[in-house]
Image (cartoon, rainbow, N blue to C red):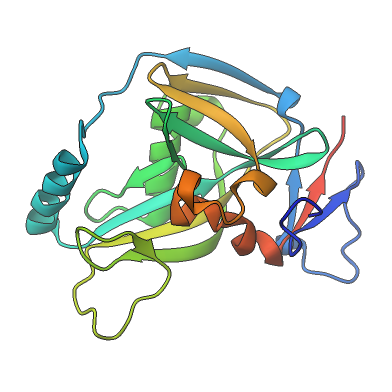
Length: 221
């Protein structure tokens, strides 16, 4: 990618890529943002009014259920010939990948599909268009309640408090997104989030690097 993400491979090919020399699973087709319809629905309750509230909720959940396991989706679209990532913005300041915490005993794939449907659809069945959850991009760990997520888990950390896994979610060529009124669904250029921890945090800003093993194939109208 020429705009600050040099390890990212982008191709423009309306007919798809020839897979004679590569692994088809590492080709990520993305479609124009104009292929999708966006609407809104009733607001979702905000669980944490402050950092202290979130910290207390994490401690309570850890006491009840142990390690907090979260799953988040990396969803890409094309805009202005460049790959963009779909992010949720909370209170016009904090950015999040779509996803959330798994229920006890819930599988990662089922949990992510449930969270995507809850936050981006009208109905629990994904409005009739199943979510295509693909490869796991990476795993992030929270060593303690007051620390940020990190890709490293040192051997000295015996009881991490949170594990977050990122998955590619491939979109069809059309879909309706229905986001809660109190969350903004935004398409942000990958080059803008690349290594920009101050604005997007360590996980989101690390997505372009995690995508470096993929060839992003832009399917034009």
